[in-house]
Length: 234
Ligand code: APR
Image 1 (cartoon, rainbow, N blue to C red):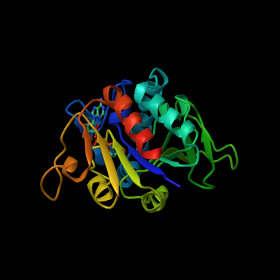
Image 2 (cartoon, protein in one colour; image 1 turned 135 degrees about the vertical axis):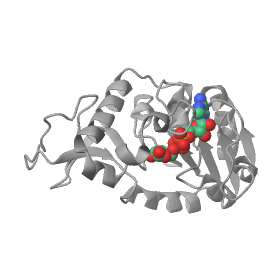
Image 3 (cartoon, rainbow, N blue to C red; image 1 turned 135 degrees about the horizontal axis):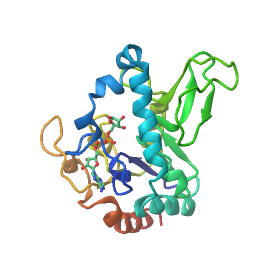
Image 4 (cartoon, rainbow, N blue to C red; image 1 turned 120 degrees about the vertical axis):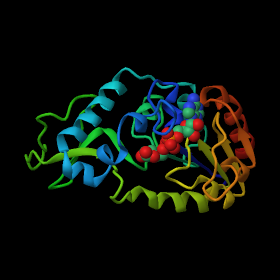
């Protein structure tokens, strides 16, 4: 049975108004990533890190899914059970577009996690101020977003998705954290959707490793991508 493996990154949500990380106007231009997205930074200043996630959660409230999110929701629905829909994004725009099978590799911005009993609960777009664990009542709670320096357990799905799928698709990611060129190299067929040619750490460009490079913004390239996936899955 033909399956498709999709990995998306911050570029998928860029046209919904959510900043990416490494673009010129990205989050890492304004914040020291190791201060707000690392275990050391969290241990050093919990208030600062919680404030960073509170702000992003608040911004998410006014963001709307874009055509690329809806295209992925149509793909999921058309090929239920045959789509590995993995995202590095912590926003809920894929779910709000109608996706039901999203695997969040780096966690979820709307959720908090108890540092004692590991309970996870949804606070929607609110602030984490004053939140206590609904199960064990401790105030030792944190954002449910994976930080640099800690494990990302959902990564185990990457290998499973790769070996099960005949088509690998990467949308709106720089490849700075997940080596999408390597995943493309290991796939029978691969498609990249990104407006920019990203250089590859080992030389050349990441798009050199993909069979098809749709060099467009996610919303402009979504229709062509959907047609290519339909062609593969038929
Ligand atoms: N449509 C598609 N892609 C876009 C768009 C757009 N409108 N705008 C920007 N992009 C692309 C950029 O060209 C870039 O390749 O999105 C990518 C964003 O790259 P990053 O900011 O590095 O985001 P991402 O790849 O998701 O980062 C991976 O790094 O900081 C960590 O945990 C964080 O999940 C994140 C991970």
